[in-house]
Image (cartoon, rainbow, N blue to C red; front, top):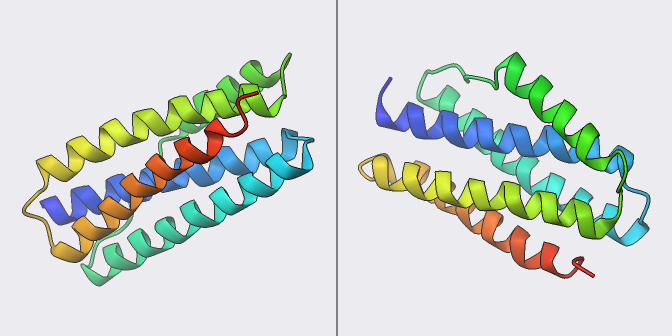
Length: 143
């Protein structure tokens, strides 16, 4: 695979994990304001996911989805971590940790594929900025 495809698949997988995680958390969260925020975050990841998929198809490539084991592992991890504490504070902390990993990985991939198509780099940068913004917004729920 070329750098364009690798970077697009990274964006696709990252945003897909965000979509799946947020869908699971929305079912768990009882706080109305926090749930509303999670829905807005879900819309961001869904948009990024669709754009990455569209670009992959434009380049004539199929998306490489998240592996089954990674999905199951993430699902079980969320269930275990929210079993005793479903508070917005606790879930925000979990999401901040995930977004921090996302920032690190997005930065590495942007640098690794810095010669990729400009539109793809812009999409990767949008993902990076989304992760950064998520952290700032989630800090408001750390009470």
